[in-house]
Image (cartoon, rainbow, N blue to C red; front, top):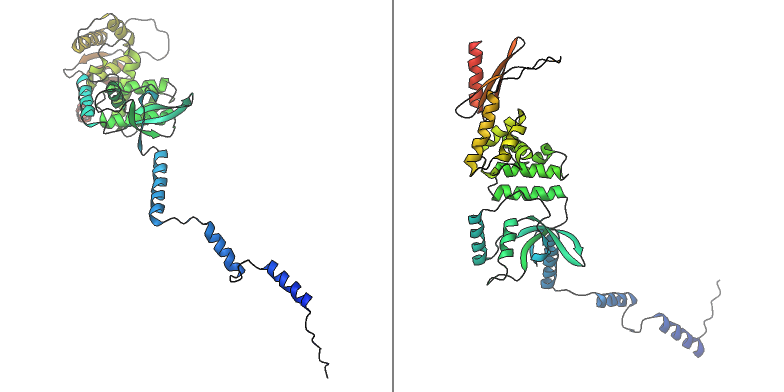
Length: 350
């Protein structure tokens, strides 16, 4: 039979020791369990935000994100904007249209912000490069100090810094939508973009700057680019060139008329665009009627001697024999329907 254990009552000193240890290991609040106390302390450290404030903070975060991506207009100093960041595609401002723009801004304010990109600060001050909105920038600058106009600031969309090609494409895209640029201006900006090293050549510049244009339109822009390259510095009225005239000039340059055209235009003093075009026509007609010069046979493939006539619509038709065959060359603006008709007539005659 198991022997029962004898229990003895603890002494007063022993009870005091147990109570002292219990007090050290438990919280000061005897009515709260330890885990409840930890939860209460954490709750006291949390910042309680009401739903209205939380919604406003979320909206502020969205606004800051949109502003960082250049989607929110803000006021910036006019003097901090560099309008020469890009070579502009527009060569001159139409006086009447520009006056109307200034009057509208003076009456109603700037309805459409300009577009800029951030540049490196100068002496701690922000700097911006103008991407698009040159006419608006000029108008607001000239209206500075007028009644109702903000003093020295302009509303702008501040885009993140991007490559020169992306900035130029954005400028051209906006002007293609909003402005009536001439073909000469389009060809000019393609040449300048290539010369400035933004694109490897005029072909790439035209393809990138006018990516949304039709194939036929890009072909015409390349022709006017050739006119700008060959004659841009000697033409007095380049913006008055009609599409047909520009294509005729480009064809003449391809046929080797560049030197003769440059000499004639450099010495001419045309009173207007009609006078200047008369000079061009005289050169082209003289070259077209000039018989081929005799030259010694230097071997190689013989040159084809061509005869030519000019139609009433300005198209030059040249033809000549080459070996056992015949070469026919057409220069100028020729509609596809007319070309198909000419081919059909040749097919019936042969």
